[in-house]
Length: 83
Image 1 (cartoon, one colour):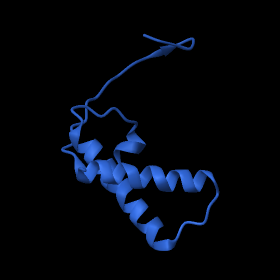
Image 2 (cartoon, helix red, strand yellow):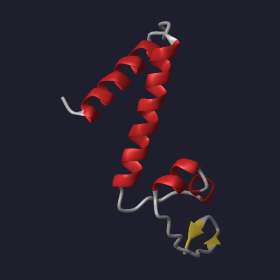
Image 3 (tube, helix red, strand yellow):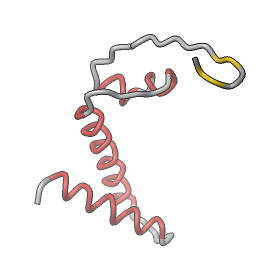
Image 4 (cartoon, helix red, strand yellow):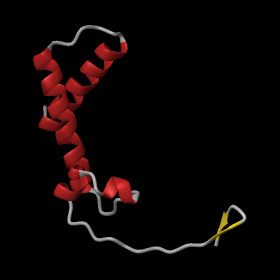
């Protein structure tokens, strides 16, 4: 089994326990949160393009895991439609 598969299985297992409102041990929760962070990092780093708001682009996991290039886009809104 690959590391990603093991991570995904652990994430799914804890997600299911949370949905069932079961008690999750602190060490399991800690590993779950680490797995989530690692999965997010891997996904962000594998993307060719990430579209996000200005606020989201300031999030540390975006800034630290990418070589960010801001593309300026200008639009005008008239009567609720974009032109």
